Image (cartoon, rainbow, N blue to C red; front, side):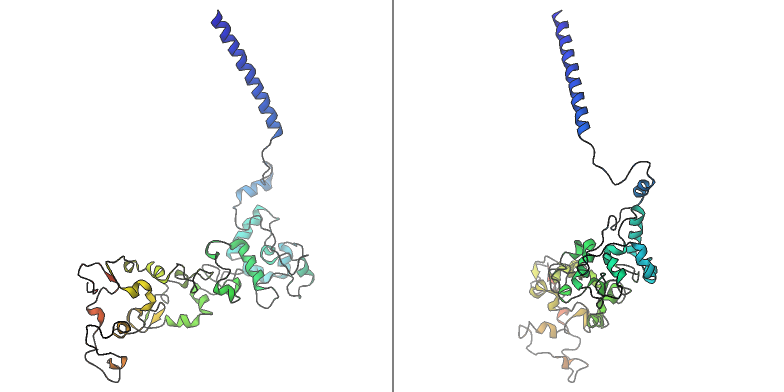
Length: 349
């Protein structure tokens, strides 16, 4: 009997506590609600369009800030295309246009042209006055800093972490000097020329000519591009190398030269540029000078005969020397980059 009364008392306590918790949960639910979303009501056709539209970089885009027209207001894409029909036709085939069209399908109020060019009300009133719209050219009144900041609003970070302070930024280059976002000229990167190499050659034509020499990197054959070794948007090095050192950049393709070696060749470990020129050379294997003259820059009057060989003693020189023609230090010192052989301190093998 006592056990029955005890179980009955416990059952009553459980029921009372459960009802109190349900009441408290109901009160909390009345006080708290889920945050609102931008999808709208389930039966809203516009919300279904947003759900089915992809999210791109232009989704929820806002008009860019133009310091020269602080009072300008957004006017919308239709006002822009009313005057700039030719630009709109060219832009329709670009990568940026695909993102903008998807953003408009998701939200018609998304800024498109004005996301890059800034609010256009003042420009629409006085179209001939420079600076009232963000223009990506040198002669339309918009500073290079404003142009770059507009692009970096979306393209910041990643490869552009070191744009500020880079050699290109210090020399007043704008993004539009290398890129053309308004039309699809190139297959990648929206570059201003048909390829990355042609775009770089616009300024670095002297470097581009080096690839026409006898020994060169396979850039003219289309097997590599300037950006395989360089980051044009800025790095920690003056030459805009993608890695911390020249050797690390070379090792990306020439991994067999990395080592570590039991016997190392000091100039090689210091820098590949001590012996090689990276773009093109008229010597074998991109060498800065022919062998043995290259080796004699460091190794002179040591163990071998003390004759100092010069280019004039080559077969094409004014005084050909049979001791020089057909000879090369690497004929015996074959492992010039380093050796792992126990008997290789002279880099013989």
